[in-house]
Length: 143
Image (tube, rainbow, N blue to C red):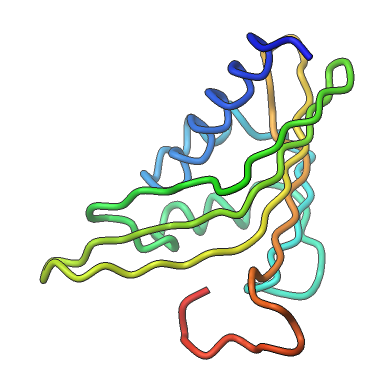
């Protein structure tokens, strides 16, 4: 595997993810295919297609990260097959509230990226709970 390609993919992913949490719709559009398909277990058990839903979510700061936040990718893995890459990891978001308290939320995530004339773009996302479903259901309202 080409180490520079792997670094390029992780840098791209950082730019893409930050666009969601900083409400940067322009960067999100540049890094995401109009043919996006995704599964977000905490939104609906059905596949969603296209960008409109996410633009609405970004516009309304759905991620709740208008303040101080950070994210970490736990156990990151990239698989590269020509102009296609699959990245998988456990996503952990940490938010600091105005009173200084911290909250964390995690989920497992895979993203499929395709490299075209305009660089890498996300074409598919799949998110799943990071708890042992169905044996250990989530106990908080965080997801």
